[in-house]
Structure formats: structure tokens, C-alpha cells
Amino acid sequence: MNEYSSATAVVVGGSIGGLTAALLLRDLGFRVEVYERTPTPLDGRGSGIVLQPDTVRWFAERSSQQLADLHTSTSYVQYLHRDGEVVHREKATWTYTSWGTFYRALLTDFGADHYHYGEYACGFSQDDDRATVRFVSGATASADLVVFADGITSTARERFDPDAKLRYSGYVGWRGTVAQSALTPQTRELLQDAITYDVVPHSHITMYPIPGEEGLGPAHRLMNYVWYRNVPAGPELTELAIDKRGFHGSVSVHPGQVQDRYVAEMRDAAAALFAPAVAEVVLATADPYLQVLYDVRSSRMAQGRVALIGDAACASRPHAAAGTAKAAADGWALAAALRDSGGDIVAALTKWEPAQLQLSDALLRRVVDMGERSQFHNTWRPGDPDLRFGLYGPGR
Image (tube, rainbow, N blue to C red; front, side, top):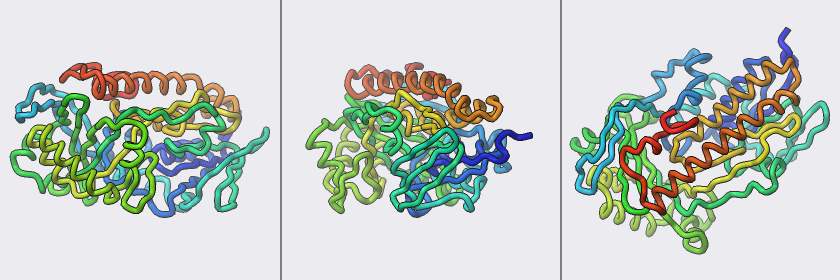
């Protein structure tokens, strides 16, 4: 008999990590409800994701959807010089998707019947038998298991670790996408089959092709990038993060909302600093947006019947391209612990926690080192194997 055939679970946060966890819990037999704070379907602002094994494992092992229908790929990693010359190029296959493409595929598998929009979780409590989530709407949801996957601004993290505060990295990420078809033939040829880096003093940019909203084909693909730029903490950062409506974006400023003067300065800097092909992509971006980069790690991920996964538990700079992979890995490890626990949810979470804490600690230490090398020490060298993507280590 399935130990969880009469068990219930609530997942707070309906993004990629939350949906992966929800699907895995449902496969174990749980009746799962997902609560997402935004009132409408998520769109990811068009940003890209580097796919790693844990991220795609659901589609590789359990889904009827074909992974090949969800991603683009490139054959090389390359670094460009200011004059446009390739200073390093190596054979290395990576695959990518757009955030929205991957989210919609997961949501298709989960379905809409038990996915609730517009519910902002503000707290939880539990006893020996149940955990209850409280929402700002006044609603509550109780279950045998609660999983918080509500991201870097998680409302639950403080209840796990009051000392786990966001620590500003000292730099922001400018992000954007441009249709490949809008680029010049020379730029398209140079960039379309590689993940491309351009490293300049105290900064670097990386870009790669992702699916467009209408498909994977060359006519629909987008060139996606993130450019890391130092901004001192304090008034300068605060002013940058105020959007056109006068609202302060604590962790991001959305497309179309970054103040025009900052966009103009960013474009001027790109033209002055980068290889012509890289600069062309940045200058062609209609609505670049900002991500303020923080590090945070909770010293706890399990508390009775409640778990903290993904960015809610540990959010870090994206240099290892491992954020979504870490969230998925947390979900897969949790499902394995529950499967082997004989139905004892509290024991499963207790068993699951130590390895995931260790993984998050190792990842955080590595990406902090990568960021410091790029943004402050100028020791990021083209082709350095220690700088490769990977959740479990460079290239892993």
C-alpha cells in the first residue's frame, strides 16, 4: 500500500522549483495544492535558463513531453576580445531554455485544478499532525506536509533561521533578450552556436540563445544575456532600483520600468567596453531590466513537517547557472527521503536536510568566489575550468 495515498501537501510558490516538487510529491501519492503569490500566470520576463541534469530530470524520466521540444543548444564556449577576436574557444555542449517555456511545460504536467494564483503566504504553524499556512487574504491551508518554494524573498525563511538575511553582492545584473533575427548576419554567425563571454575590468557579460515565445526555430530564437556591473551599496543602489512609477525594487526592476537615464548610460558603456557583436545585442535590447544580486542561506531547511527548498533556502549569484538545478535537486532528494521513510514525514525531512544544507553551502561559496574574481579581483581568466557552470562543481 502507498504510505502517502491519503496524505496531503501544500507547496507555497508555483515557480519551477515549486512545480517540480509538487509533481514529485503527487507521484508519491500526496494530494498536492500549489499556492502562487502572483495573481496571473508567471512569465519569467523572457529570461534564459542553462539546463542541468537535475533541472531536466522530470522531463527525462517522468513526463510525456519531449525535452527536445523545450530547449536550444550550443556547441562551444567562447570568449571575445574588445576588437571582436575570439581569444578562447572550446568544444562544450550546453542546453538552454526560456524561463516561460520551462514553467509552462511543468504547469501543463501539473494541471490548473490544484494551482492557486494570488495567494501570498505570510506565516505558518504546526502541531504533531498537521502544518497550516496563513495567507494575507485571510485564507489558510493545512496539510501533512508543507514545502516553501517561494524564492529569495521567502516569508518563511525567518522562521527557520532569523539570522539568514540578504547580503548584497556589490553588483547588479543587467538582463535582456533580443530576437536573433534582428541581429546582423555577422553577429548571428558569431554568437548562435556558443555561450559567449566578454570579460572587462571589474565586470563581465555572458550570452546564449534561448527559445522564443513562439518556438525553438532560428526564426524565433532570442539571444539572452546577463551583464554584471558593480554598484556601491547605499544611495546609488537605492536610486538605481527605483522604477519609473517611483516604486523601489528590492531585488529587481522589471522590463520597461528601469529609469531611462540608466538604460542610456548602460548602452553607452556597452558600446565602449565590449566586442562589436556583444555590444550590438545589448544596444538592440528594447527593455533591459535589473536584478539586484544577493546571497542568503538558511542554516535550516527542515522544521517538523515544513521544508524550505530552492532560493527560499539558499539564493546565490547566478555564475554557476545552478539556481533552478538546486531547487530541482532539493525536490528530488526530498521525494527520495519521503519514499524511503515508511510514511514518517518528520523523519524524512530530518534525514533529507543535512545533505541539502551541505550542497547549498558549497554552491554559495563557489559562486561568491567566482563573483569576487570577476567583479573585484580581475582574476577571471578565459577558459579557466574552475569557472564552468555546474551545481555540484565546475562542469558537474
